[in-house]
Image (cartoon, rainbow, N blue to C red; front, side):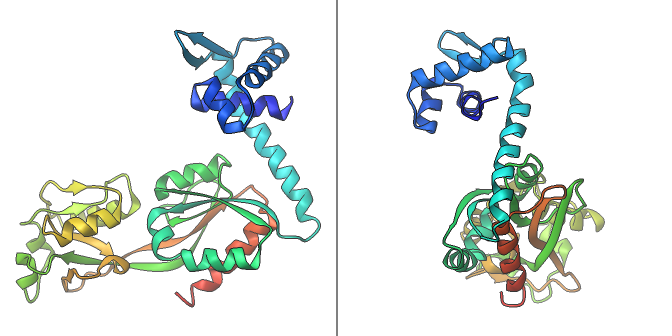
Length: 291
């Protein structure tokens, strides 16, 4: 199958629009239509329904989509593998990076990487750590730098790089800030703002209170830690945040309570890493003794 036809098919599938697919691929809409027609002729099946200006996959198209994505990924991997035989570090490195790490730990490392490897094009997507696992499993990202899952994931290689200590925080004028020796049970009397239970950080905090059989007030939640920090600072509630976000917040000295999350990188167990990915992993592994 022609890779240009498959690219057109995937672009239309994602955008649900021939014109938007043409814009993404920098070709004309008629070119997209011709490529889809050629692919449909090859497959002997109609791949899209076009009803009232709406474009949707037919059952045949839905069957083809994941296979088309795998074929193109194999093609890209083959090109990268052949290029890597020369020993050069070049090509495109597709990374998934959590929002927090992208803001607070990786900028100087990314700068150092592009300076050391100017022939590598970084294709970075910033996302929740949980989504990054799926990106790696689907082959859409070669390496992800994220908060590591609480349990091992099938076909995923994970390596911890940093321990990220979490602190109990509130506003400087919050009633909890007046307690000399606060305990977990005291926190239950006040509103809390936490990452959602769909996040690894949120689950770490929720598990702690469940183990102590302490029921929290109905928490407000958002997956963006920077937003939580701001909401805590204006007194909307207390929270648990990494030390990089404590800033002007009051840190509550909870006795005998030390919690942290693990930050690191992951990649697919069955994927041969490109030279560019290996160089990136080597750089962040060395950073664990610096940051």
